[in-house]
Amino acid sequence: MEKKNNQAKKAVIIGASSGIGAALAIELSKKGYILGLTARRMGVMEKEIQPELVSPSYLSYMDVSDIESSISALHDLIKKMGGIDLMVINAGVSGSSSNMEREAAEQLIRINVLGFAAMLHEAYRIFQKQGHGHIAGISSIASLLPHPNGSAYNASKAFVSNYLDSMRLRIKRRGENVTITDVMPGYILTPMTEENKRMFWVASAEKAARQIARDIIKKKPISYVSRRWRLIAYLLSLMPRPLLYRIF
Image 1 (cartoon, helix red, strand yellow):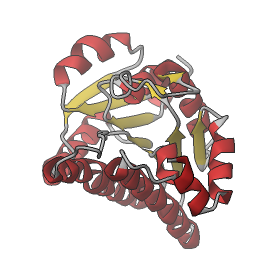
Image 2 (spheres, rainbow, N blue to C red):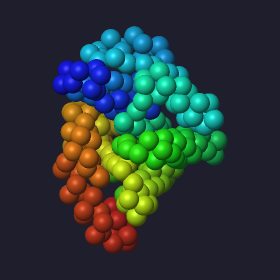
Image 3 (tube, rainbow, N blue to C red):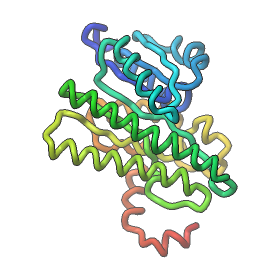
Image 4 (cartoon, rainbow, N blue to C red):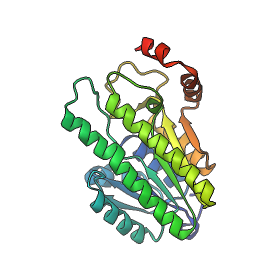
């Protein structure tokens, strides 16, 4: 462990039962962070994640689509931890819109958009009050482009990325000591993506977590995971929409 417990930073990871969230919990634990982990699958966190952690950790059930109970659970968790320095908002779902019913799209939006916004604002209020803090939100390279089979998902990630960017500008203008990091993964091998046969430049969740942890510690405003996706992001920013539509 890099620091003694009484000096360790404290991080909450929302959505820590699998994929990037679980891998990041293990990585931050190695770096000495005291952790608060939330997810709907408490059993998975208890049996599969917590035994891998080398620093103190606390678990809490959270379903971000239930906003009021999530806010209450967050404050209870922070109280048990004795404070918070970093919040990672990773909770989210994916879904193909090619055959997505309206109800499924609305549930995705409740989690990826409304749940995210609620957790972002609560973290900001906490850090604003205590005078310091760091918020990392997991968006996606998918936020940069439309997709015929991922309209709801891509739009939800565009919301996340734009909201983080706007919050960063607000904080800068107010001169507040709160850091915002937009984590933009490309293709990451997780339970949510393992059936996607069209992925390229695929990174493991563990590799992604190592880079995300480094970028958080460096307080980078944007973390492209892996870094080669920075080039794709730049090219997409230059590409005329008509040309982009031809690709799909």
